[in-house]
Image 1 (cartoon, rainbow, N blue to C red):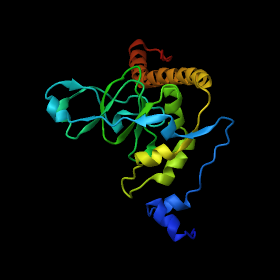
Image 2 (image 1 turned 120 degrees about the vertical axis):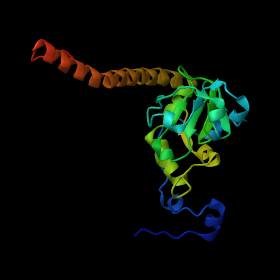
Image 3 (image 1 turned 30 degrees about the vertical axis):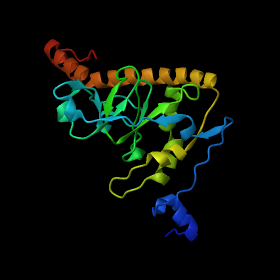
Length: 228
């Protein structure tokens, strides 16, 4: 059993009684670039809307289940009828980064670009708007989805069955912030890998059908070689 002694004043100042907050060791990243808290490079977008007031219109609504863990790809996404969305939703705009606050270890981080740039999302996302002259949105998404940030987030989760991270705790986390030109160069390479992931996933998703089709064709033609 692991235990530590905590000063009473530290306990009060922490504003929480979560054991992991005190037991989790701080994650240190040795970087040649300066470290800044997220609060200095992003702003929380706080706009919300009640979808019930929009009636029968189709809206681009993103829930946690629509974002793949780690890669941040869209997953089984399609517009929804506004009045079918029962809870108040957050508004997001192009280049915002949506960070899944519910069970944040699942690493659901979506960059609002390309397929989906504007719309509304579940309240279980924290909507982060990058400060334009401070941080590249692509770099921001990837650093937030990195194991470095994910390990730190474990310390700040609150709640037993449905742990969450608050916006205040997330914004305390320090990340390396290279000069913008370096961020831009890194982001180009990150986009290339993202594109490769999408291409490989598309190929992977098509293989089962190709496999069965090739088998049936082989049975018809009497061939022992499958043309997959």
